[in-house]
Length: 196
Image 1: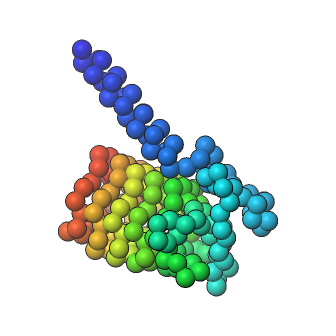
Image 2: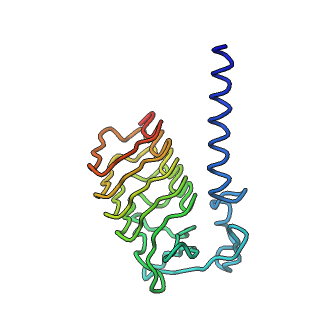
C-alpha cells in the first residue's frame, strides 16, 4: 500500500511539472530560438510573431501584449548587468515570460523595475552566472522554477510586495545562504529553496 501511495505521488509530481511547462512555453525552449537568425527577427513564439524592442544600450528584447502591458519573452544582449525595461513603446512591462532568459550566461546581475508584477515559470532557469537580483516593489509572484539552477546566485533583494514563491523557484541555487523575505509573503511552495 505504501509503494502505491509513493508511486501515485511521483506520478502526480511529474504530471504537475509537465502541465506547468506545457502551458508556459511551446515545445521548444526560448533558448533554442536565439541563434544566428536573430538579426533578421524571423522568430516565432507561442504560435505567432512577437515584437522586437532595442533599448538605448543595444539590448534587444522580444515581447508580446500581456493584459494592459507587455511581457518580455526573450532577450539578446551581452551586458553583465541586465536592466529590464520598465516600459516599451509607452506600455508598462508587467511580466517576464516563461523561459525568457533561460540559460543565459552573459549577465551576473538583474535589476527588475517596479512595473513588473510576475516572474513566470523558468524565466531565469539555469542562468549559472547570475549572482545578484534586485526585484521591483510590485513583484507579487515568483513562479515555479523561476530561478532554478542559478548556482552563483548569492544576493536577492525581494522588494516589499512579494506574496507567492512557486515550487522549486530557487532550488539548486547553492550559493544562496541567507534569505530575508518581506512580511508580504503569504505562500512559499514546496521545494522553493531546496538545495539552496
